[in-house]
Length: 241
Image (tube, rainbow, N blue to C red; front, side, top):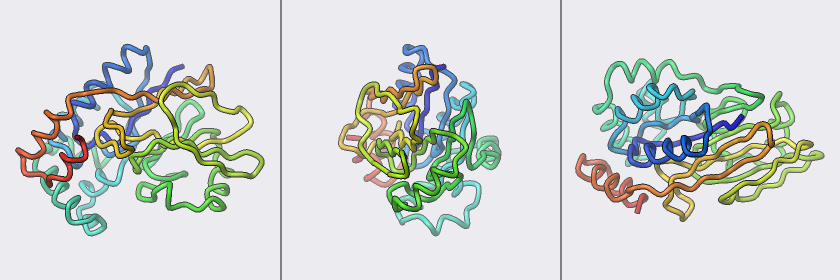
């Protein structure tokens, strides 16, 4: 099975549409999302509707958490808080209800899916976790592979014989060691921050035990112009260009 794993769309409809087209052309499916469908971008309602219409299985990200629990807005910096308040004005009550019902983690086809860090952290960044603690967390996982987002960066963390190794996840296909466990950070569809402006996602081939990191071009200028026009912080647009 080829499972498409996406994350951090952040209201970027232009990027999301191109990623879905790429998923279809690659013959992948089902699609799983690691959260942060909303926030930063100009089209949170349209993205959330498309996620639901495509029956994308989704966990809660920290930006969904802020919508579901407004008291958590204080955890965000000023720019992100402003973006989330605007986002809340742009979404429907049906979307709020959907957001409130998102789980913190999900298991599917012997994989674990979570926004921040295994086993079910919405808020913790992978780069914050020291190797010793990460080795314990990965050793306790029932699954051999966990997929995370949140950092907007592509990374593969491997645990083998008690040793942690971290490396960037590069474009293209790479095999997974059947004798190791992994945490795979799949980057961001809508707000990449790795120096390459393409929308990023990963296809996990469970039969071949491999990953394909996909880099998808899209109309970033249109996405950026919409962000500015709606009054979101300028940095949200600048990150796309």
